[in-house]
Length: 86
Image (cartoon, rainbow, N blue to C red):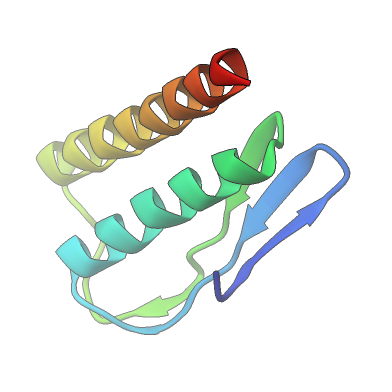
């Protein structure tokens, strides 16, 4: 995935460009899923290179956090199930 790299046990996602808020949230969730497939213990997401929307409000931050947490959990469960099937 573009802008995603892994160093040791940590993944880094540093997207760039101009996107809307919902597209940005989807990009981060996709990166989290892709990172979990690599096997890191955590991920650092740096969105300072992304433009196209203002500072999110409280509800938007909550929604973003919820989607990111679900993406991490979903990817972790898929990885655990794949390991069990081996």
